[in-house]
Image (tube, rainbow, N blue to C red; front, side):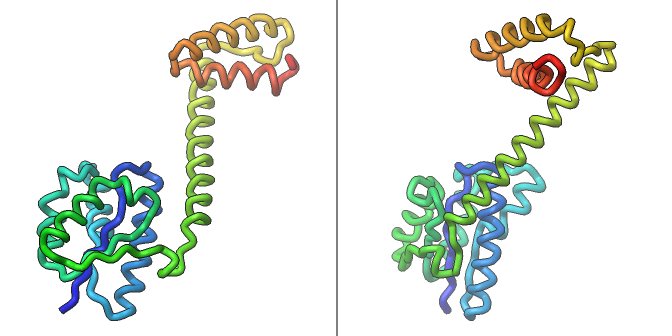
Length: 198
């Protein structure tokens, strides 16, 4: 009986990209089921468990698990997701399959009707939106903290020079490598840009 092991890159990508790949792999696995193929997709099986229980994504953790499943499969298919050529996991899975004499097939995502360029563009947009939301939440948290400490008057012209000097000081620290200054730089810039001080 033909049993396909579906290999794909995973570890070196961001959390958001891993989630995107997981969702695509679910769709591809379902398509293969509908084609009457028996398939084992390790990411579809392991990603939810690893995410929920904070298991490491690195190959060393999953090596024996994957090797066991490859050994009971008849074929190995490599899905050519971005990064597949550099993936340690895919490279090792291919070596295991070669050692077992399994046929190996390299599969373009277009065979499953997937436009990877469009999906990656959507991913980039989603990542940017996530980063933006996270950063603005940090800005608001800092503003609330300072407001609770009694700081106010950011839109009062008499504080323009003080705010400008603080911005220059924070920017110099940020340029020197103190990334904790990023939120202050953003908030002070916002004061100058959005208030009566511009």
